Length: 248
Length: 248
DNA sequence: TCTGCTTGGTAGAGGCGCCTACATGTGTGA
DNA sequence: TCACACATGTAGGCGCCTCTACCAAGCAGA
Image (spheres, each protein chain N blue to C red):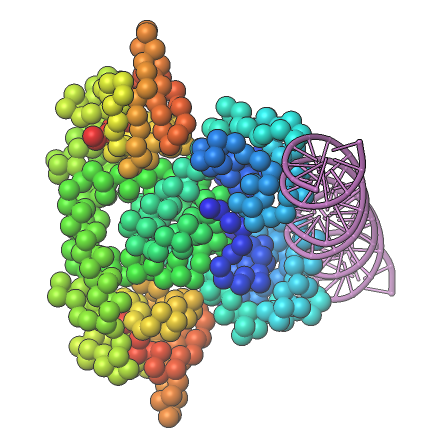
């Protein structure tokens, strides 16, 4: 399933892509790129930069004369723009659509930009273009952001989006959660409530929207609940089970 | 900007995460995980698997007795689920929202799952939850997919989404493109038309929604156009410039 | 039982990418 | 002019991750 072979021939390692991108940004912002600045920007020692520059020069992507300023060749600039475009598209998605904090969007985009394929970029940008071009997408995005905020604040969303915060047993009774399943019953995860740490723990366990869960058994004292999720048995504490809303 | 230091302490390398995930899937699907299967699934030689197993065993993530079946410890299963959750969330986004072909969604998700932070996952899932829970999101998504299809097919979208395919000079005159800018004028990229190769080339150059471009000069024969994009001068052929729709 | 195939493990090499420690240039101010 | 600071480069080391080539265990059939 997760084959290591990459579809697109990718001659550049992630590290070299990072160096190239850093040089691109430095040339753009400071006009010149020096070893010291590259090291600082990338968070590595200067000694690590030199061999990287040699490799980039060997690949014909930069003009590199020892102790001189470093400059991109046309091919290098093209490659840098390719990486940078992925960075931008991801950042755009993360900040403007998902409303991540800027710093988080940056770090995640920086990490993921190396592994997004050209075809994947195409599809992602198609979505971003739609959001920009199609008028009704504005309303949709606003609704999402409002509901998302509401979700954070613990209030009820007036837009039939059934978003509620879990105040320790203050969960809407109408809403089905894992805790309200009977043994043998199945449900499909709709959303996970709770403060970010509790929520994140549940997400890491695989309680994502659309995932099918089956309640196996409840411990006598009702302190713990055993589920079958994707072929595996998973145990939840009751408080956790109450946070996972499901539909049947 | 692109600092190498990661926010979350990440003791596992991407490679080890992949091994862990592979074992997880094998145990789930085939009940047992053998070296041979792991190697096949990951696309590496068996000889590469052994040292990886030793490292995972040292980390307490798998039970590994030489020449016996390999099994996950509780901690290993938890870690595997953590990686797998990222994989699933990304796959979900790619297939159900962005409508990527399944194979592409898999490979891109496989590559990106290692670099998505826990916080990033949280935001992404918030969006996926909204799509599942909020009724109006269904209509929105359908509109996007319809427009996206139309975009592919080269027809006009009836929903005021101004999506058109470029039939070599058959571009809607009302729609501003880079080719219709005057020297000194600026525009903001709305969307890029064209067949996937031409479009992808432009995306790689950085013509993404929202990017500010300024037309600098047009070559006398009008065969080429020079732009200023993010501090850099970029040259486009006229056919290319006609594919980039802008708003002012 | 012997032969030989499959499976798994060992040894050693090589590339990458980082590090520390040290060497070399280059320019500036005393 | 000398000395010092600072930027840059070199040498060597280490961990990761893969490879090839070879070795060992175990099972299957003649």
